[in-house]
Amino acid sequence: MSGVANLAYIVVIAAGAYTYGILTLGPDTGNGGFQQYVLGYRLPFFLAVIAAAVVGAVVGVLIGVTGLKRIRQDYQAMVMLVISIMAATVIGAAPSFLGGEPGLSLIPNPFANLSPATGDWAYVAMVAFACVIGYLVMRRFTSGPMGRALRAMRDDEHAAAAMGFSVIKMRLLTQAVGGAFGGVSGALLVAFIGGWSPGAWAYVETLALLTAVIVGGMGNDFGVSLGTFVIAVLLLQGVQFLPQIRSHTGLTEAIGWMTLGLMTIAFLWLRPQGVFRERRPRYGQPAVGNAAGGEVAEGHS
Image (cartoon, rainbow, N blue to C red):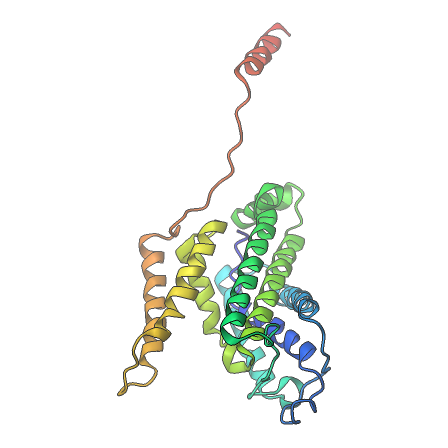
């Protein structure tokens, strides 16, 4: 919607995951002392998720600062890609900060007191509810005056500035809102899988999210939601249920990533607008009587 290709988006997801982890794990001595990390609180689930959203928004703004000096979009994407690689390297080299390369484990699940099957489906229902709420919140930013302002900034930032829009503020707002969503995503993910490490947020994960946007349709909320379901759920998660090839360990997962790359190239070449093209807002025409009256009044004057 805003034209910002954030190839460091996985960093804000990781920030939300780490925030949830260190706010719910308790003291580092509480789990046998085998892992070290800062803080060590035991906040309730929802408070930890909210904190993850705030941290994600802050990290998103910090990443967005790299785009304040206007550079070509492909160069800006390259800068953000380097940021994601640097972030993973720095975290992996600091074992006393966030667990280093091994990362954090034994992160509590809010439904751990339920049976495994019941707890898993309860988590699915909670994430589905979060997705619905997130979709409605996102619509508030992508429709109406804000959506028009973001499109104007994307299509011609000089014209948008001439109309009185602050391009810098809108760009940072985009990164903050996207960062908050990424922070919530990371918190919900890590609370389910129970662990997080730099190996879990490689920069290639951002490419999966970018492909979901390309396949679904850039600038279309429903299209991006559909693309996320097809790419992140059906493709990358679905390959895990395929039979493994004993002579080539890991080939099945690699097939998913190869298919991802082929889909990206195919859509950029054959249908760059995605499955659902961007919908431009339509404005109603003035009533015929009013238009005629205006013409009569103008002719009379």
